[in-house]
Structure formats: C-alpha cells, structure tokens
Image (cartoon, rainbow, N blue to C red; front, side, top):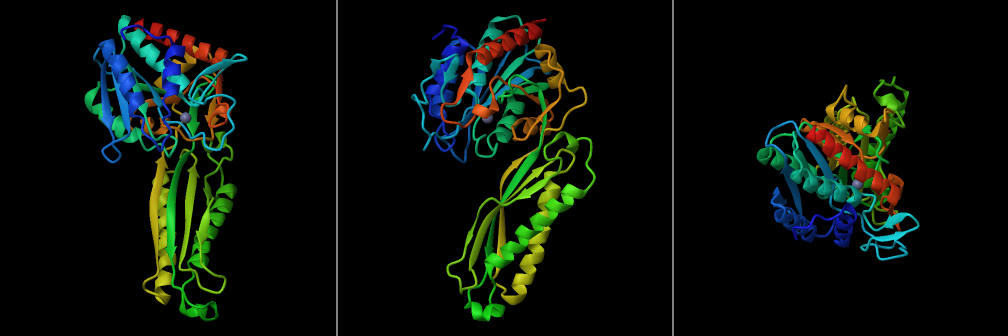
Length: 388
Ligand SMILES: [Zn+2]
C-alpha cells in the first residue's frame, strides 16, 4: 500500500466507513494508520478508555520542532436514518459536478485533503512541521477533541496554528459562539392536585427555571453589546430549552420534569459564568422545594461544553489562511466547532474548509467538484508555504 492515493481516492475510502457518531470509527482509524505506516509516517492512535470502540489519531511530518500547523477534522458523521438518499450514502458518487456521500461536506472531504497533504508533506522538504488530527464525537457535542489535544501535546512538538476544516467555502472563519448544555431533572413530590400545597410539582418548579431563561434572554437582548458580540447573530447570549417532559396525570403534582437547558454564549462572556448563574438559580429553587418536601431535588448534569472561538488579533492561523486564500473578509458562524477547544488549549485557531455547511447533515450531502479541487489547491499552496 505504498502508493500515494489521490484526494478523491482517499475521500472515497473515508466515506466508505459508516462512522456515525453512535458507532465505532475504529475501521477508519485503522485504515488511516495502515496507510500512514506504509509511508513510514509517525502517528499515534488514542483509544477513548470510556468507549473503546472509538479512537482519535494524530500524526506528524517534517522537522521535529515546535511551531508547525495542525490540520484537524472529525471522523464521525451524522446518521442517515429516515433520510431519502438518491444513492448509497457510503459510496462516493459523482453526478452533475458534485461528489455525493455522507460526510463529503462535513467533513471527510477535508479529512481526505488533509491526509493527502500529510503524505505529500512527508516526501517534501518541509521547513515547518505539518500535523494531522482526526477527532471523533464532534457531532454529539465536540467531546472527542479535548482529550485528544492533551495526548497530542504530550507526544508531538506543539504546533502554533490549527486549521479546523469544517465546511466554510474556504473562507477564514475566526469566531463562533460557545455552547454549553445541562440535562436537568427536577424531582417533585406527588400528591393529589387538590392538596398541591402539600406536594411539589416538578413541572411547575421546572417552569420557574425555564422562565428564568426567558428573563435572561430579555436582559441579554437589552444590555449594551460589545464590539465582539456585535459580529454575531443575534449579538447576545441566548438561553434555550428545546425539549421538556414530565408528569403522569393532570390532577397529580408531577413527580418528575426533565429538560435540557442550553446556552449559546457570545465571545467575551464565559461559559463557566453562565453555568454558575444557572446552578445558583437551581439551588435557590431547590431550597424552596425542599422547604415543602425535603426529598424534592434538582439534578443538573453538564452534557456538552464547546468553548467559543474568539477572533484573534493578527492570529497566526488566520494570517496563514488569509494569505493562502486571498480572503480578507471577516466571517463568524453560528455553529460551534472544535476550533474553540484548540484555542483554549493555547493554539491560534481558525475554521476553514471546502464545501458548504448548508449541505452538512442533509440527505444527498455533497461537495462540489470545484470546491474539492479548490481545497486540493489550498493544500498544495500550504505545502509550498511550509517548505519555503
Ligand atoms: Zn462537522
């Protein structure tokens, strides 16, 4: 397997592995490891000890010095369940100037280009190192990248800049909101509703927390915006409950009420501050409930934590991408990525990848041949830059 595969051949292989987040990605990682081994490229597999059917991979080419560049992509994809596909989602098919397949846009197209660049970089005379990071569990809350970043820093010389290749039509995306979410379970005390003063309705107490979110949204909208926040739509932090369940009958105070409380936080505000504010309100309401029934309680479990990507002043990643693409516009996006996690770990980070986020997660997901080719050219230019 010492042949050097083309980006399209690599993408075809990567798409053929149905790496839906709930399932294993080991066959994909093993194939990539074998391909890198055949070229004698240093790489490391990190198996998640909590779910050994998933792994990340990182690799390094060029001089073993600090200051290199990481190309980072997630290996997981969203499910195709219930979607109406015109062709097999796990077979890349070219039709009408587009490559169709699950992940072609988000983001195995970039993954393929990054792996291609790594192998080419291995055979080129790079002056600065190039690293590859393949993460997992991105689609279920960006939970795979942080431990992988820690491992990578232990075993590879630390790079300076990271390109997270989420589909951005190869524009340099320098900012996005942070996000964090809390599974909240309110436990009340059931009595007949005619005697509700002797019980605790988990639903009615939970509603107080949901209404707390309503009030925060009004406050956030009305307070003066920072310049940083003004780049985002909307330019304030939002608190949202998208699902709620609970109760057993209309005339029984609810024994349980469950919902997720999510925050999308503008750069400049901190996720831990919002978590602390929420937990303080939870504690206040829980104390009121326990004054009626000591067994009543509220459990809050953090289910995701994706730090925002803060636009950097003359950041190395942004500067590099701008010089390669010629794009000098400022772009921020409304979705979270792993770029904020790299930034939190001390890298300069930017989001830039081929394809359009509008095609992500859809039936008949595609990347245009033109975008894929533009991504290929981007990687050639990048290699030339790292060799200069
Ligand atoms: Zn993605």
